[in-house]
Length: 614
Image (cartoon, rainbow, N blue to C red; front, side, top):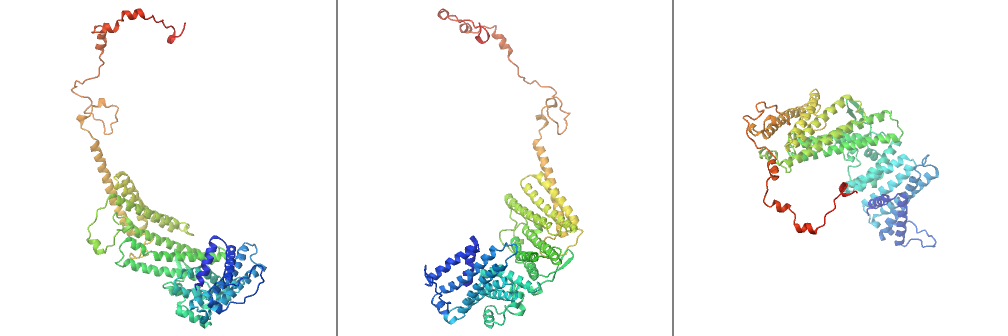
């Protein structure tokens, strides 16, 4: 019958584009259409007649009666949520007749849902399965718990929500539906936590444990149905295993941050820290195995640790928000302890994130040029016997760019640590973070220098390598005085060992000498190319306009013995000879014809400037 999916999908679809008022109107229309299909709707201007409650026989004849009952309960719930949303911003809160109206609507919806459970229990007539009955029972428990929550009946409220949680947990083990998980995380678990707080249940108990203890074990039929789906769900030994955490029974009770030990009072944080320890142990074992060779596979092994660490961060933030909503001041010891815990778990998340980037960079944090991951999976034996393949410079530059992106991400993560509460006042930690940043700055500068070297820009490569060497020298001077707290076989994180800085220092020292040699060779080659033999050069007296960058050549001041060289001379002889030599045809060209003189009139003489004037 899929009761839960019918209700949740209708809520999500309506609330995605509207509010509870829109949802209430949609339910009213759906309910009227459903009554029309069943021929029980009151006609227009007709007299209302009570059709009576729905029976198991009605449900066996037509399944529409099931949706009629669900729509009735859901409309009452939406009506109550509509009033609650409208009056949530009141200065005095929801009081008086408004609260009474909300409680009455929720109670009406709970009665309709409980009546549906009663009808479905007659399995011989309705043909309902145990799953259908459990879904209807969980839905009725949620609405009844909401009514008791508004009425501030905390123990019955806790019992109702615990029933819904146990049922949905049992159904999720067999049906593998994400809808149940969403209901648990969004609606049921926060209500259980708040009701447990009102009934003075300590926070050290996890929500699965609280739900198991508040579950009505006296209902033998319900216990039997749950036992068929999840036999170990209600046992005493699985108080923490219900949450799906590995190693949760040995959850830590304290957390240490910078030599300060803080007691963990929230069970969700303790379970998250226990899952981090279990995931770290699995990561160490996986990295030590011979199957993991490629950096991408090694980085993928960090996913479980990162997820568990993020869960611890979320649980700590949720615990702080709950205390703030309860009106607890910042000076309270619980808030102070949670702030320290928050800094510790956030530092742990960032540390594992940096460790994942270091693994992706390759061997020795990507300090070696050929330490990037390969595209094919090879065993260690094949990798050692395989001949190295020569790659084009463009391929190497692309890999260096990927490393620079990882180093930038690591440097941003280090800067984000400084923004955590309490870090700015810890001088030793700030010095350690600065030294760590210098180490990764050196790696970044080395990668950029190598890209310049591959493009034949030796001077740029030398400057960047020198900068990387200076940064690494400062980082090595700091880490050489500190002792590492983790063994060499442990997974990489933010902690930099002295062996890492020493390896990079020695590598940069050799790279610096190599770059200097390349620059010197390029300079000598350039001089050889630009040099010209003395015989081809002009004497110094003819090159006074040039600056002697290589010094003055005093051995070639002038050309001796002098040579006769042609010089440009204007032919004045021909200009003078033109006036005295009578060339053939000169008279004809200059003498006018007689007839032309007689026929043509004389031209008037021009006066003034440019022919104008009197």
